[in-house]
Length: 147
Image 1 (tube, helix red, strand yellow):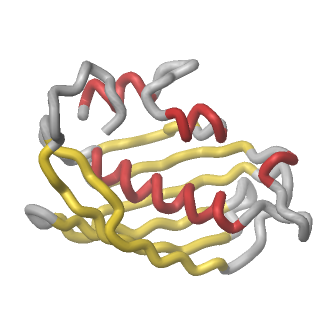
Image 2 (image 1 turned 180 degrees about the vertical axis):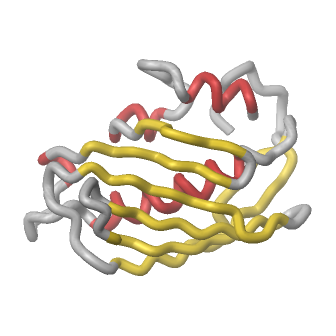
């Protein structure tokens, strides 16, 4: 996982195509914590004039997943088993989103995490919780390969 996390922080990274497409930046990832940042643009706005809820949910899910990834041993990967998202306030076009996540309980095969997404003004937009399955990676990945 260390190779992936190091590659993810590089400008123009290609190990996480979703982050590259959306413009998500990794601010912080350690064992049990992660912070992701996204400067939103017009392409993420839905018909009602606010950032699509799926983008906010994605930020929460990915922050939680990366908090889990930060503590995984080499040869293990994670997959979201369940994710509950509560939308508390709309995000306006042009907002900078900060998704912060923490692991609340780490088991051998299931990890539980919580996340919040705020805007640049510190306004709470989303609260989320999730459970993540930990399993052995199949095959032999190249250094920096997506988990």
